[in-house]
Length: 402
Image (tube, rainbow, N blue to C red; front, side, top):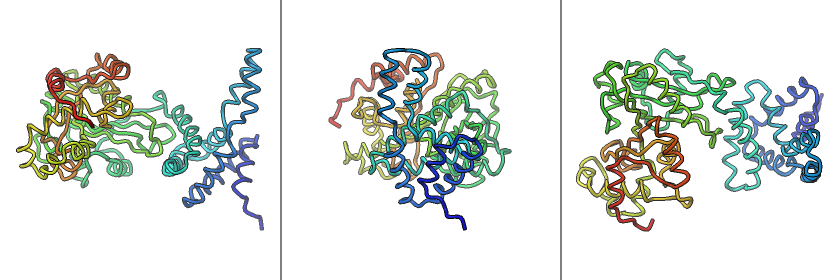
């Protein structure tokens, strides 16, 4: 009877292993153990990594000192090798096992749960995040269209990962994928071919839509894509929680704009129809009287003027501590270089839409010629790029103390 190796014994063998076969063998054993750990066991493992597999400060200090005296190739190589913790070497070896990348992504998903109460684990997360940023950089990502003819296994994942407008049935999904005036695109990684990273759903229309129901209506009139003038990105869903903090959306949207323009030269406008997930909580905090009146479509119509005034204040003046907009969807699109184009007071009349966004939806506009300029102004000067009408309205709003 062979005694089962402890986690520390496995870790030691993986780190010290020089042969590829033995490293793979021990790495697979450790990976399986980690995947079967309960939360306490996994937390203990992460704490061990944080405390015992850190950078060797003495070696790093010595190598930096040597390089400062003699910047030879040999000293440079020694110094840079000491910048990495033993955790990084461990994660690289775990990544080499079968389906190693997605398995590490899923392990990080569990790590994220512990970070708030266990600050020391942030080092572990930094190491994993830096590796993921290299492994999932734009050069490795592949764009694929998703259609009604895509494999059922992948379509099930689209239903599972949809985060903006719930897919209620296969008929609902079919309505989003099969008609000629609908598109869906996703990023994939070569090592995770059956796992989408992020996907965007697109409606081709002849005008700018103001309500999500008009897009999701199964009885709507289908148009010929050649007659469409506008591409509407109405749902963007990140699929892998373990890749939180790794940006894909900006690359995907820009790639889709390029692909659609190539396919349909008649398209002039590329806009989103986006939710406003933080508006309800903000309004409840800053104007509880108004928020209390919002219960259905009728009340939204009655309060429409006041609601839009508050919405303009929210988008232009409600800030985080870092000075950037408080709304997460707004931050995402402005950081991509898009501009705030139009606010719709009756955009989403679902129970969720009224609760979270007080019915609001907005268009962000993607103009390729302005993306870089808008991006730079946003980050360097905090300027919110917007249509002339919204910019004009924003200057008339009295800023409240948030």
